[in-house]
Structures are given as C-alpha cells and as structure tokens.
Image (cartoon, rainbow, N blue to C red):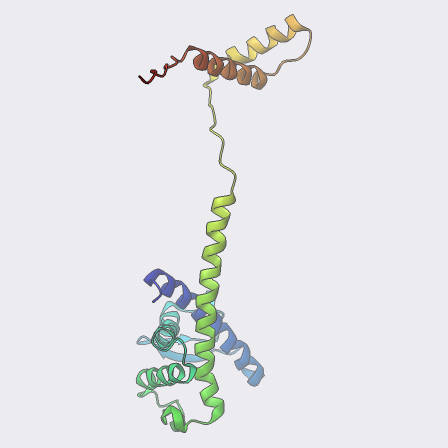
Length: 212
C-alpha cells in the first residue's frame, strides 16, 4: 500500500497530465473549438475546461482529481489485474456522471459491454496512474540521493564592522613587514588554524591504566 503522501503526489501528477492530454486530443479532433470556451459544471460552478492545467479553475482541478483518486484506488485494489482495475475505474465514472445529460447513454453500459475503444480509455487511466506512482517514487529516490551526495556547507564566520576593520589593518601591517601581500582572509584562516593547534596541544592526554 502506498503512503498517503505518495498517493497525493501521484494524483497531482496524473490529474495534470491527463487533463493536458485530453485537451491536446480535443484540439486535434475539434480544431474549430481550439480557442473557444468549453463550459461545464464542476463543483456547482460553470467553468471553462478548455484551458491548460496551470490556468484551470480550482473546481475543475478538483473534479479531475476525483477521477485520479479513483484510478489510484483501482491500482491499489488490483495492482496485478489491469481489467479488474479498469472495470473499477468505469464503475466510479458512472457514479460521478450518472446525472450528466451530456454523456452518451452507451457509456453507462457495464464495462464488459463497452466497445473496445471505450475500454481502452479506462485501461489508459490505470496505465497512467501506474506511471504516476513510478514517477513519484523515482523523483523521491533522486531527491534522497542528491541530499546524500550534496557537499556539506562550511560554517561561515561573520565579523562585525569593528573587528573586520582591525583584521584588515593587521593584514596590511603584516604585508608591509613581510614584503608580500597577505589578505585578511588568509590571516584569519591562519589564526583559526593556530588556535586549533594550540587547543589540541593543550588538551589533557589520558593515560591508560595498566591492567594487573
């Protein structure tokens, strides 16, 4: 069973790509309606669904996600049986659309009685949801790997204006004394290393007691 977080991510992935794929096909089969509104009721509100996912009304997005949740449930229930999963998707579609007069009556037939072209639509939901789960898991693995391999950030030492000025002045005096340029950063690094070396040298060394 996938975690709730994984299911939510897969639903978002599925819904966005399914809508944009539907819109692409709609434009292909109805080129004269490419730039026309396609108004449908979604969540009690009339919205234009002929828009890319990123511009789609939240009510329409929520409606798309309902179908995505149904596909996720189907995959969870029947992970190894594509036909049973597709049948489940079809039953859920009927429940959601039984009061929609715009839907052809033939689509309300049992899954077994549907034409193959309509069955393929339900099967495609299953295939796309499985792909969504795989994509989400792959992205998470890549993110974890990136975190493990990312270089650790070095601690930054910040000086106030007064101490920074004193450090710069000290670097100038040392440069004049040595006859070569010593930057404030190099002087600070050398000072830190000297302090660390002194601390290590002063640290008490514990002698091991001899066993009797």
